[in-house]
Image 1: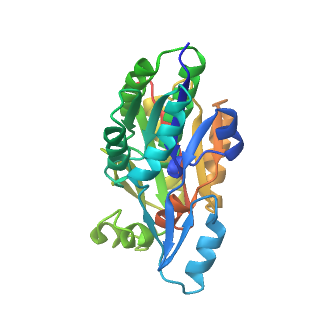
Image 2: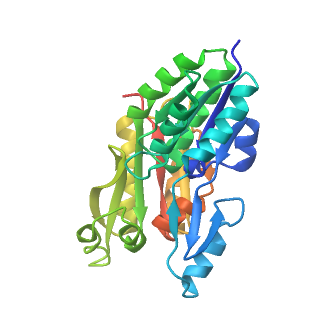
Length: 279
């Protein structure tokens, strides 16, 4: 059986104990406050990021993982006889995927397989969980990469944000999309589509927002081999409805923490689902 190491980046947003259990190597994105830089989830956590934003620090930015960092980690595992599967946040949101590909070219190896997830946060997390299950089943790395390439087109997301200001400031959404928020209680439902954040629907009020998010699960039917992932950043009213729906319908789910690199753009009061659909 091949020795396979799965490598991803810190936008994966899975619990640290689960990542350890799955034996996943996570490379942290850099969080920059002006001239100060911190490793996401290693040197800084999201509550501190929010606190610094509220206290008037410069708005933080994120920086892609460099090719040299990938070279260092790839070489470490290649030298130990591993084949590497690297599943990376969407190339539409970061240059990190390009860094991973450049590192492979620099090493001149065919033993590194790189997947552009075309998603982020818990969508990426679902791909990583599935890859770990396939690895543990004894599947060769080349076939795992093919399975993940197929699965990524089945990742669904439905997310509600109280404010889109951070997404606009961070360049993840055009300013025009955010104008309607706050008007007459309008809530925008977003998704990750074709590798970028996109507007999915407009509804009025939290109850309709929760209903719309749930409607996607009822329409597309989550796969049984992967959990629905529930993300929540202090959005209690919608979160409670979503959680109760999952529990009442006996749908396996996993609540996950949001890391700095994603939380910077989402801001507070964000909630929603990621799941792999049967269709």
